[in-house]
Amino acid sequence: MAALEKKFPERTHLVEKLMGILFMEKGAIYRRLRGDVPFSFYEVVMIADKLELSFHNLIYTDSMQTDRFELNILDYANMHETDYKTWEDYIALFGMAKNDPRSKYAQSSNALPLSVYARYDSLSKYFLFKYLYLLSEKGSRILYSTTVLTERLRRIFQSYHDKLKIFNKTIYVWDYLIFRYLVTDIKFFSSINLIFADEIKQIKEDLFDLVDYIEQIAIQGCFKETGTPVSFYISDVNLDADYRYLQINDLRISHVRTFILNTVVSTNPAAFEKLRQWIHSLKKSSTLITQSGTVYRVDFFERQRKIISEL
Image (cartoon, rainbow, N blue to C red; front, side, top):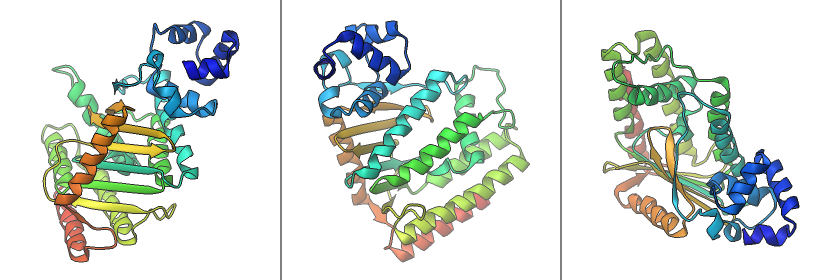
């Protein structure tokens, strides 16, 4: 708040600026400035970006209350404009990574991450289906065939997948059973007639293509689309959860995946450092397969293809 007031001493001028940036009514802006409603993490980031303010100086103020973990819950069963905008604002941040030679994205996963599978509509639809199934009321029947991946959400997922490739450095650490978990789940849904043979066939084809895509990244050590380097590790111990962090300029964000498609997010420096240390500590029990570990790499991908063949 102090940083905003310093840049815009006149409150009316500040309110008008924030209305334009956040696409909010005047009353909503005043409630945030008074502290009645905290600025969300994404709102703070958009303000810092559009007003060319230091994110670090802007975020650590009492009135914005961002020194906390925030459970970022989007209603994928009934997406509203605010849900779409939250996603779009988040992805817009990635553009800043292009001009930061130290930008970094790192993720440890025990489930196939959206950042990888979003290039395939069948997989995006599958994880949306699984989310809806698990959160549905008892007795309701959720089918893969009737699950609707809206065009706007599909574009958002695809944009997320594409924009992450502009980070100067990417690190992935995957549970060695990551495809086994997925195939086991799909078999379960098939056994209770919620997903059918022709649908599984498309998912299976896309999974084979995905394995080929990841294998090429591992061989080349970079994304072929952007040439930015990637370090790919396979953990030889089971991973307990999905963690990720990104850093762009003075922005540090840490995430913990929840409810399949949602996250707990924090900009707390201590939380970021702890999560960063955790992801990097996983390397001790992992094998690097990018531009190294050829025998292990070939064996790993062949095993994944055999697992997918079970579908």
